Amino acid sequence: MRSLLSTLTVLCIQMLLVMCNPLQQVLGVDGVNFSVHVENQTQVRDTMSRRHHRVYQLYSRTSGKHVQVLGRRISARGEDGDKYAQLVVEADTFGSQVRIRGKETNFYLCMNRRGKLVGKKASNRSADCVFVEKVLENHYTALMSARYSDWYVGFTKRGRPRRGPHTLPNQQDVHFMKRFPPGEQPDLTTPFRFTTVSKRGKKVRATGPR
Image 1 (cartoon, helix red, strand yellow):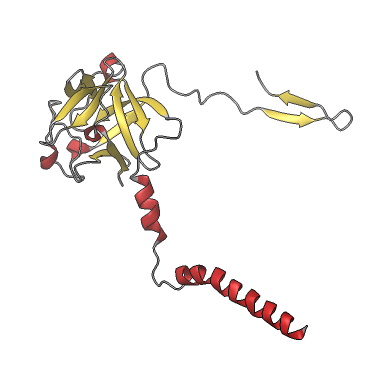
Image 2: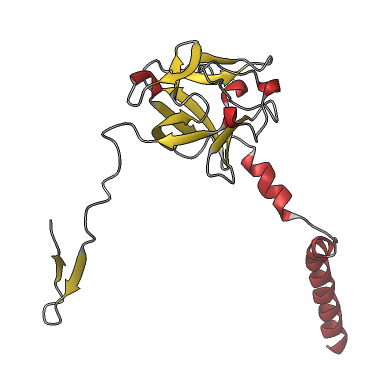
């Protein structure tokens, strides 16, 4: 009987050692950087989640106008509220990668292999049309090509597109400010509504203006 118990004890110990060995191997690795895994995931396109869409205008710091998607042609000469300056921004990954589509023309803002800004049809799912949103220290936004690293969306003072290889993140040509189209600004004047609970009937009653 004792020999049987001893045998069972040895088997249990061996099984525990086998189960714990993979965990020991993982924990025993020095300098494991889990941020690499997170970074890799942000570079993978999110095809499972429901796409988040935002509509706004991109004000160019250099031209003083708004980015326009005029079909295959791109410019930064749009006035505030111009129909071609209203852009639909689609989240493309778990990170900060986005696609930008003209609401009026349904063409995407893209950058080809020569660094030229062009518009492509909505049916085109090219990687040329994916950009990385970067919020700069001066609170402006820059758009870097996800395919061609260090190439940015930029415009001259006349609103003409700059080629990607001629851009840098510290240039005013690549600085943009997000603006809501006229009439679509969120209402920030609505007062906060409180609720009170009656002790007797435990009924919830809203207070404040409706």
